[in-house]
Image (cartoon, helix red, strand yellow):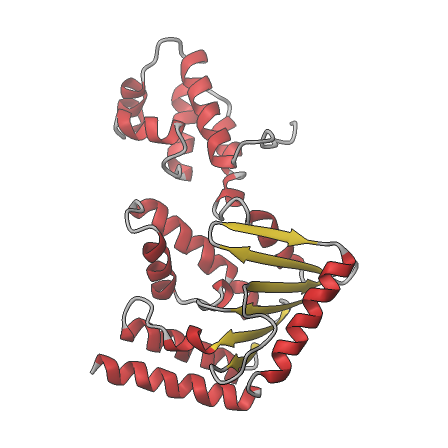
Length: 278
């Protein structure tokens, strides 16, 4: 069986949608979206949203459509490609490298890094950026993010070191209850020796004030950096630029609080959020 690949210039979800439309129109001529929807127990509008990549298809629905259209399992196989579209298109490749990394060193300027987010915190982050996000897509994004957190829980996973700007622990995301639970989750990971965290306080400037940076090393490949801004991200593998990113990270780490003092600040901030809730 030939390996399925997403055509250049299309996201996996767009490819799935285009194939669904092609199969609907070609395998069973003149079948409308409404007719197909009635046969698989969804609305015609829902089928249209799948074809235009507005909604994320469920695996059981893909199987039902395959059966109705007699595709031989094409959509079920295409569904496997959607794992890549669970992330923003600019981050999907970085997410794959993240799984292979030996170490991950990340600076977070404004929000808790995805690998250590709680579900409630992740939900609040997504909704703050896209308040009109459909519920099923929101759930899919949260699920994808929680799947990433398994890397931190896995004893065989990468060694993870974070520098968190103090804004990350002070800003209320969602509400005070969500924020306190998030900070205590980070503290628990620190105390279980799953991650190392340093906080860069408001009292000191540092070399990474201008953006988000993640550095990854690998067993048998050169190191790599990932930088991100609003709605855009970029992998960096040019050796000199990666070295400069590493230097900036080291300079920021040098002026941040020690891991012990950082844990104390995180726990104190969690209490502050709890008191704000009271």
